[in-house]
Length: 256
Ligand SMILES: C[S@@+](CC[C@H](N)C(=O)[O-])C[C@H]1O[C@@H](n2cnc3c(N)ncnc32)[C@H](O)[C@@H]1O
Image (cartoon, helix red, strand yellow):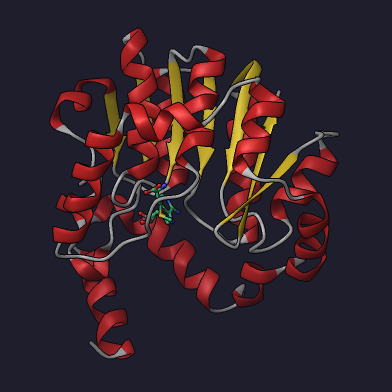
């Protein structure tokens, strides 16, 4: 598919979904007048993050006092099945991130309610749900479907059926999903951000999500090196964050 065909397909898919019109408007602004917003402060943050970065194992041990090695052993079978599901999925989306960090954040907080933005195949959803199911907890997720690829039906493809009863998936852009999620549940033990990567999109969502994180709860954001939104947000709110390097990218994590 050429770039023009892809843009056209996405545009037509948007037109069929009136609930996504507000996001279409924001996307047009983002990709025209606000183009540079995606990388604002990127250099500054990458140099800061590379100085700060520790491994996922180290972060889980320092912040939560937990060892990450049981995760892969205990859930080997489920993770293997999920990897097979990802391979057989006809559409391609973003892959797995720092799953242990998410799982052990839920374990550490004995999470009853977690919220995440950005689902794609559902690797991060799977990590939270594996912990939440033990306490009959709930994961609230926000995800924009992959419109150009007719990907709606495959969002969360690696999440096994038996975990879906602990999961509420809101299929809108974050700006629409998050108010709906907060109306259903106002306070969360764990927050995981992995959706709109623009500077403004992040800053808006971080601010909203942070208000709904309980004291002692864990905040995690993926790909914080894309721009300086996460670093600036932490500085503005006097938050002492840990930076995790994972597969060449940076993840931010702190306890409120
Ligand atoms: C990197 S993927 C998420 C990967 C997922 N956390 C995992 O571990 O498998 C990013 C997802 O965010 C979604 N997304 C992007 N912008 C969004 C927005 N403004 N609102 C909601 N979801 C968005 C994309 O459709 C995509 O599914």
